[in-house]
Length: 174
Image (cartoon, rainbow, N blue to C red):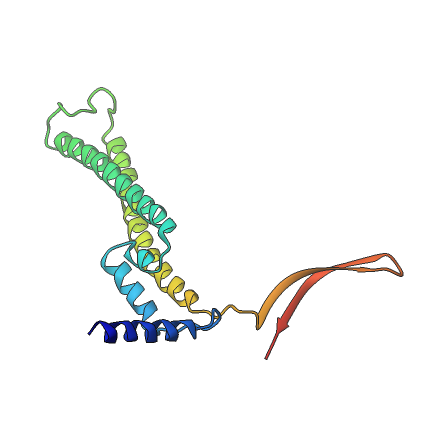
């Protein structure tokens, strides 16, 4: 039993040693998994892609958008309730003595409603960008970057005429 286990481990280690650093396995479902994970829970696709540094950006964008949505929604309701109370004939709203014209209350309502709606667009936009980023990053992780295709800057100095050339060299090996 122990001998069979050791033989299987030895065979597995020999198979792993045959893998060269430039060879890699393409998994066509990797982008779909990353996209699904990010759609289910924002940031999970980035964790799947092992891009942990993107998590604070995602949660910061979504969190800030939710904060401003809540802030603008509360102020919108304050102005709306004050306007409704004035229309109903009451004169005990929180803006009494500060804002005398009903038109100013309507302007305040419209102002905070517009910014509330924009905040909702930012929440949805950040969520969609999170999904898109996970998908693109999973695709790019499978992109083959080896020595067969390189792009390097070069600096060339000509000795006879003391002329310097700077450029970019594209090398393709077959």
